[in-house]
Length: 200
Image 1: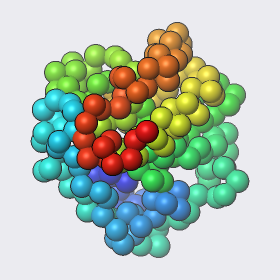
Image 2: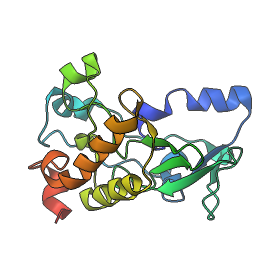
Image 3: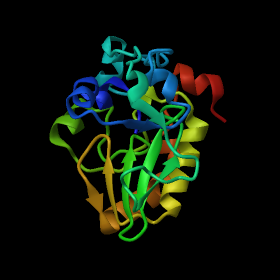
């Protein structure tokens, strides 16, 4: 639910092949229409090797042209009638998560993730751990914290995240509760340009 390079993949080719529309939050549209680049990743952020490698990650916008549309303001998701979209900024301005009330299924994107993305070892082993968004690309930690609080309040039963394996049941509920309770200590880095600038 974000246009970062590691989430858009082959979207331009797929949109052309299937002739389908893409929907995004209005605040994400400039990054999907070629008008604005994402903020630079932060290699100075507290974290492991992946954070140090982040300057090589692309942050340029993609251009989906007329194929990208703004999500409806009423929270509905076109072509997915059981889902609602929830604005969960922090990792990016227009980040959204999708929630289906009937079975409490959540597609969280990078609002929170189920593997410690800063640790290359944990990325390779996919060790399950409910974590905040990837540190090196999160630019607003105040909003990131509020987004996690908002998602935990939904009491999801199962979550698919942008990084890591699906997680469900008590592992998810306890992990999210712990993340909310200890967000400042476990999610927010001790230092980094986006932390030093605006986190309180």
